[in-house]
Image 1 (spheres, helix red, strand yellow):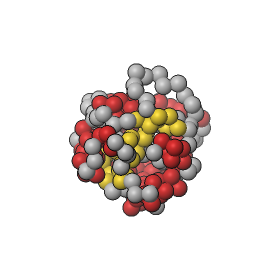
Image 2 (cartoon, rainbow, N blue to C red; image 1 turned 180 degrees about the vertical axis):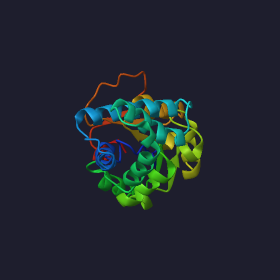
Image 3 (tube, rainbow, N blue to C red; image 1 turned 90 degrees about the horizontal axis):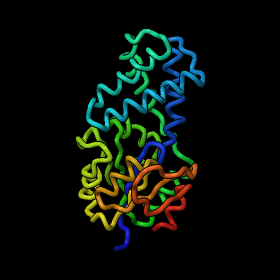
Length: 227
């Protein structure tokens, strides 16, 4: 069947999340006097990766995630974990206000919209944060639906989060593709939902996962050749 819909992951696929994270975390760190050098940033990213893994596994909620990552990070950098709740709130405010995009994302998404494809977002992110970032990026209106794990009640790689998007766009799995940066999360969710997976892999990294990858791209404008 011809492709009628394109579903996108957001973080590290459409959004330049590393840039947004670095800027927002730097602003928050300054308020409590933590120098955000390479070690502190690496410690935060390690803790954040762990906490998001716990969230995907269903062992913590999104609300717990927001504070826990800062509690663990503060402990790592020998600061008072009691500041975690305040830092979590400030961080989300700074983080969600930015719409930093991967190079070429805006033009790629808008071209697909002009060509008549139905576009959707499927993300494990916090609902209000992801929607605010999309508005800041100027791309919010390009997507016919935005499905977040917080609202859906499912996190990737659970295929039901993708199936919700398919239902809203009124297309079958065979009429869609899913574009994401993480084979073990995005790819597995797409495989389980029977949606062809397009791996956005700008660093040409080996997959390292037993996942069916139908297409691989290093730039988002290469989606033209896929479609």
